[in-house]
Image 1 (tube, rainbow over the protein chains, first blue to last red):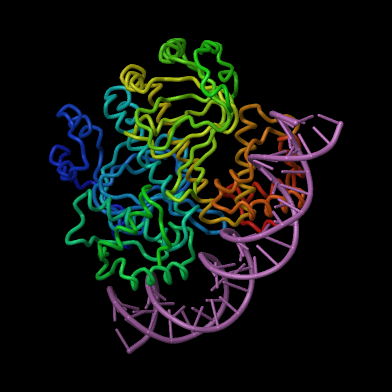
Image 2 (image 1 turned 135 degrees about the horizontal axis):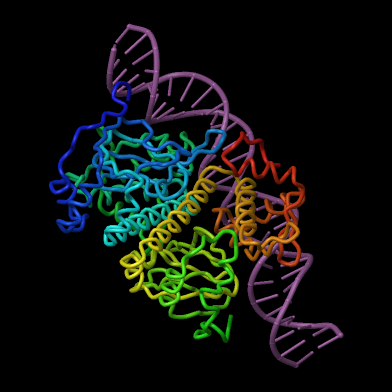
Length: 252
Length: 252
DNA sequence: CGACACTTTGATAGTGGTCAAAGAGCGTGG
DNA sequence: CCACGCTCTTTGACCACTATCAAAGTGTCG
């Protein structure tokens, strides 16, 4: 996070060959649409972990696509408290809200080193004018992000510490899985406990205690920055808490 | 909320004469766009307070505009806990997320008796194809709603009970004010304490205690279902907590 | 090895939850 | 007109979950 804070200009692969297209989570695009996107894209940019992709209050924010790495949206209060609103994974749109609204009401920070595809704000309008199908998908992606914030809010407002952590882990596991990022039940989990605390509205200390309680109860394990979901039965109970399906019992 | 649960067919005013257009909050539309909207609108519907506008899990939800009254989006957990995600005021879009996503991941309930303008889901696509400017505004409204959920999440995750209530009251006051719903410092405030609790992630009892503490401290008063913001100095301090401006002190 | 960031643990305090019951407000029906 | 039932609000007592404070432990990197 020191010397390379905004390495730009590296071309990245052409959109036609974008590896994200291969993932099951991504719909097929027509050649027309792909070349339009390709023309829209003005840059491929790398940022180090910890740097701001969008500053709080920034005007004229650009629109990005997260090509590689993790990021998160957050909102700060004047006294330093901050809330992580949602986590962004490869393929997610970065800064749609900021590019539609006059000024960003939140910040976006790189959680790991990231690579971004850059689309200038002005051309977002072109996209609406000329590629309604893509515009529709943009709106769809926006709704999807809102649904994730909805989930988080429900967690933070209604669940206790253990349930919140379980829900977060499961949600990230599923999203990582959909991207093919899970191998042998484990996936890279770059969130620090402070960041988990900020995402769940908990204190760092309580997060640490609850986190290790869940680990010791056999829900999951951490090793080498990777998280493994253990014990399918327990995991299923965690999922029951996460899904709107069946009645929960206390987690621990 | 008994006999009239979905009185439909009443025409409502033509969009050209929509009273919401007169409010400063609403941008001018061209005649073209207005007649397009008018053609899109298939119904004008009344619902009683307490009824569901969109059921949780509902598929093929229609898109609405809230013509009159208040509503709220919510999300329930299997055991009955529920989180109110945001409050909808006249002029707000209802069900954008539900109409873009395959199935609604939340419910929307009428808080007061409401009147809705109905737009069929299928035609939302027409709007993207033929009226890019309107589509852009739709996406803009979606981002605006997400920003409101962001605020709520930050409140619930980071603020204590008194601050949460203050932030909610101020935010609603400002929105009501922008719609011309405030007269002499007071506005209709139809939320029950249970609903406030559900919105803020608090228990009913604690909400009641904190609410009356704020009242007794002279922040606001309730009478006849209307809330009055008292004491500009205290209000300014409440606003300071709400705005991302200056460092807060304890509220009470 | 030391600096630094992050995690863990123990002790203590407080915000907010739960339980229980009483008080207000309001429409319906005797 | 008042009683009854219903919903919503208020209050008190008690307890638990979570925050705060403090300090030690672990790991990584130059």
